[in-house]
Image (cartoon, rainbow, N blue to C red; front, side):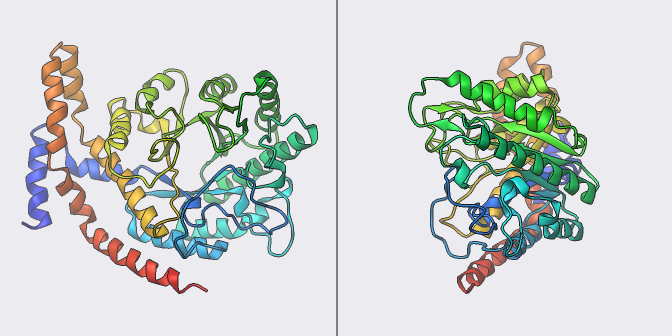
Length: 416
């Protein structure tokens, strides 16, 4: 049976449930996904050695050949991803991706001109940019505290870095004609029991207020701020300053966005149930799509139960316009282009799957107290011919994708 024939049968099956597969496909392809930059280079960045040094905060395991070493190589990787991944994409890059040539420019002094190549690429590819300050892999982050450091000079440095990053985001927004989302994640915390949790959180509040809330030089309609919580990190197993309770409260009290990362919670927790809870009070959420295994390992995203449940929850609340979607995973043990393709395509697939959910019928059954029928329909949807719907638009691209990743594998091995 051809893919066209399979699709016609699948289309009829979904139509019997009142679901329009053509409309779902169009809608799924229009929802933007912000591609994370760090799968290409293991978040090494492109600063001069004097500006940025290894200082913890993120760890990619594996030694697969072909890591991007320059901005040009990274942009070549993203070009390839754009060819083999369907739908609307954005790109979120880190401050440590500044390109300053041979000049040493520390992070408190980075400026829009150091991202001119990225903005030119954005215009050429018509791919909007998002941004991330880089609060790790720097000498002033080695002590484990940045915006919450008890050293005033260290805090001042990172506040200036945060402001500089937001000004860069504003410039990116003007360049692309649409807002730039800025995600603030800091790895501040302690390996063992701290004696004084209070001071670190008070200092973090002061620093964030200075850099975001009280800073009037940045247009907040162009630079849209989000803060990201975390349960623990390497070197901060016992205490993370920016916990879920902290950032959830900070974001809503300051009128800024809150970021939920699928891997930043206890292993028994998922973010699915949290979406409807937070959106009762928060205007919008940024979702980091990842695949945690055990503890925050950020494996390449696949089309698994957690991913489907996440987007089903968004669909059932019709909250597509209240969430921003970005990917966040890194695996240096496999082909990096393939990692991008697998994770991004799985994310798009899960979005389409959710758009083909009979949410209205399920709600009607639940309201009528017919919970048995509700459960039965939920379970029957798992064996609907969804693959035929995905294939009709993606089968040709899938073949190109496999060929491209093989080509990329060979090309990377020959990089000098």
